[in-house]
Length: 330
Image (cartoon, rainbow, N blue to C red; front, side):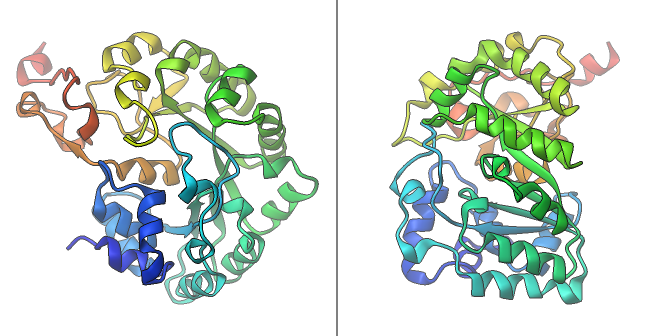
């Protein structure tokens, strides 16, 4: 049975703050079972990951004020949340303590810039103490540029950082995130890479950045030795015009060509079919939260069993190309 949104949310948020969580996480075109997963106890998360055929891990949600002002995300619940919506450390500690019995090695720390949470450093220390030894942090990368931060994270078991970049050009990236951030982000990610952390970069398929995706993928490969993960933008109807900002599948396919420097996450299998599907685990789980569906044309597709489907917001204009038995024989 799916974990309900309220049952999962209660772990980190008292009843009076649930409306803020819904504002931050978004309820439009969202899968409520995944929203519930975000705050579920570790034992429940492990069961769900096994159902999804994903590796065992914990996903720790730290709600906080975000330091960026991304056009597709920023609202008052993200940039200036009320105090009662900030995740309290006593709840974090109770969630982490469960691992003394479960002995899970991998932990993903996610949220609205968790690295800026007031209890982030104590969270890392306790996570290490209860047995998490491979910690993945979803972050803007900005704090990593501060003196001593990378060494501290490494000492507490951070092995992977998952960060967004939107263009290899500072002006375009900074235009998306709503602040001057590109140079500091690269300094932080470079420091993490030098310290031996895996640097996993993700980006969104946006009309305004489509032409720069190939260059961004080259930057990621040359700088960090990894593939760029590209995901569909999450619909937020009150923040931006989805139809204007989100490119068609055909436009994305044409922009990527046959590049081997990129992987996709959250897209149907028929989009850039030859490209791998891969991302940091926290990003894979984050984009699983988008509500998806299969249009009638998908019925005969041989890839349907491993396909996430089409994001609901894109259904009206998505052109899918099912792989049929005839295609397989050819």
